[in-house]
Image (cartoon, helix red, strand yellow):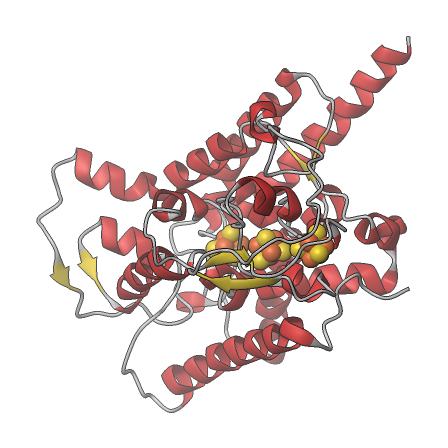
Length: 375
Ligand code: SF4
Ligand code: SF4
Ligand code: SF4
């Protein structure tokens, strides 16, 4: 069985090379900083948001401004082509598919994507938790305006091994790293474990790309800039659509592409679109293109199978489990609570704690709920 959209042709092949290039850049940056002592720019990562809100202008803060500005013109193209986390998430999706763990191949081929109600609230709470240190800074009146940060954050700033510690310096528990071979292994394993939980564990439980669909807080920043500028490029119907739905069935974000282009003047307007171009690759009739220009002419019958999907409030997600509201709310609350505790070990540990808590809560409650329903 092969993946519904192959990594070895079309846009996916180009994306594969992009993600490899992004990771090579990260390795180059580490080598430049730590081995060759070329310190032209510091850490460029999403934690630049914290710097920016705190008034510190550094490389990471500039990167955040560039990313957010790019949304206005290209939508979430950054997500689909440049985000290194997305690269890891899709890598683990590929591993799960190849190894077919827990019948993943079957679910993946049918594009089974689980989600929760209130995922935007979830993302918002995660963002709030991420920003808590700088919010406190503002509340205490310590904000003194914007300034260029001279002492740049090093590339490893939020990763295991920084300042020769396994966790962040102020963590309640820690391990000193003296950079022996064993310590390199420990740091490597810990970093891998974080990515494993974000990619492997979450993909496995909630379907491909779950981190981007459910938890990642950055779409909260991106959403207000989506569909605001007439020159923003969007996935667009430029030819005669047959209504075959291959595009919808291949979308990792659960967007019903064929329904969107039917209802929104040939455009995918969903805030969830990450510009991965899987829909474009899946369309054998070359009907889709990423452009700001208007839709192409439709000469044949365009199947009007669902006229008002937005009234159901679910047009962006394919599957929401039939669970009571309290399970979704409970899973989100428990997840943010545990994530806030584990974030004391370092920024990325928020996600480890929150994802494990979310999965455990949801799985157990689902089990209890199904037992109750049977009885
Ligand atoms: S949603 Fe978050 S993790 Fe996913 S690609 Fe976008 S920024 Fe990266
Ligand atoms: S856009 Fe292409 S893949 Fe999607 S329904 Fe139309 S013909 Fe099929
Ligand atoms: S609509 Fe197309 S480009 Fe957007 S996320 Fe879905 S498959 Fe990717």
